[in-house]
Each structure stands twice: as C-alpha cells, then as structure tokens.
Length: 125
Image (cartoon, rainbow, N blue to C red; front, top):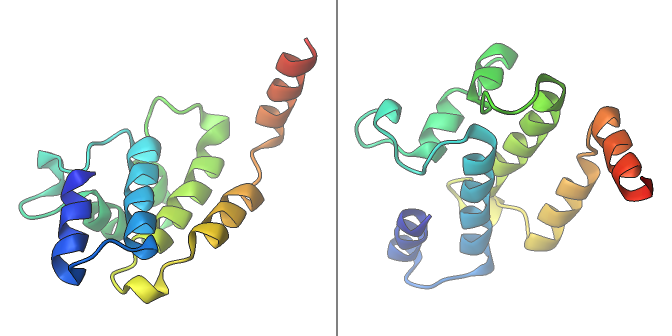
C-alpha cells in the first residue's frame, strides 16, 4: 500500500482525503483478490489497480479476480466490494467518492442472505 500512497503523493505533492480513498481502494482490492499490491503475475510495470481494472470486462473475468479461498456463496458480495474499490482508485482524484460516500456504498452492498443468517446465529447462539 505504501507504493500507492507514495505514487499518489508524487503526483499531488500532498496527501488528501482522495489519496486516502485511493489507498483504501487498494486495501479492498488486496482483501478481495488475496494478492499483494505488486505481483509478478500482473506483468511488468503493473500493479493491483491496473490488473483489476484490466480484468474487469466480463462477469467471468471478474469472478477469476476473487480470491479462491472465498466461499462460492460470497463471491457476488466480493465482486460488489471490488466494484467499489475500482471507484476508489479512479485515476482522476475528483472522480473518487468521498470517504463518507465510500462508507455508504459499503453499507449498501448488503451481504448475502446466507452470511446474514450466520451472523444472526452467531450473535444469538
């Protein structure tokens, strides 16, 4: 993540909420894909952001981005989070959501019913 923060800082010469949103988007990508910010499989001079964005063309290719250790019934939820992460890492900082909007989007990306039931059972049980 430091690489991305440094890249953002190099372009703008200061750290802003929008650069924080970018960094948070990178963290979301790491969580959903199970990948580090820079991996050899991304290709030369590519990072997780460019890798995710270049593979975000079809539902099948997006499903392949999701970490294989994520249970099948949570994959759709993971894709929702990945979509939000791509908004956070938009090249133009003014196009990125505010942190408040980001939190709202994550709250609205409701988890699957199966996950909700497990939480209820865990809390009540």
